[in-house]
Length: 209
Image (cartoon, rainbow, N blue to C red):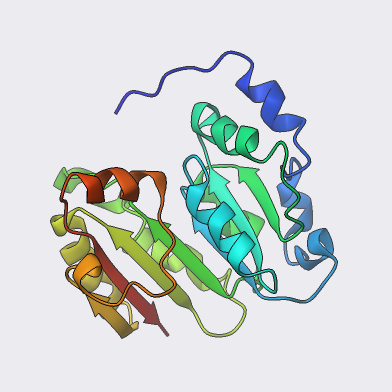
């Protein structure tokens, strides 16, 4: 999918009070950003922010950090936050490839929502549930490693289930049709709203190790 450039996006993002501009400086000490010891949950590839904003509002006792590498997408989340006061939410503009350079033994839960499926086999390592990324996540979790993933892509879901299993994760919950199962506590992403309205099946898996 080609992303449309948004004029001035970089400046809007950099000047937002929700953005952590010098994220590498806080490695191992992101609790200082929030001023408390509450759990830290991260969404990788947060898009326009519907999920991470909704989660932060619903769970004020958890600190949330959204990660997004595209200015043209992240700026939409920043604009939504202009008139909001959510002290337990911050955003970082970064590529997930560097996640283990930014965080260290301080994350309690990781959300992977509607990630790029990278359908070609030669691009499998780029999938956020590949061994490459799972090994990076090892160093960011504080105690138990917990990942919650949602997708509408059946092949990515099957790949991820196998990848989690082969990497030593245990499955806590799995849904092959989320909207016909228990939706309690579910917060939608902007993609999810679109997919559901089109009748797409949504898959979800919760794993830990």
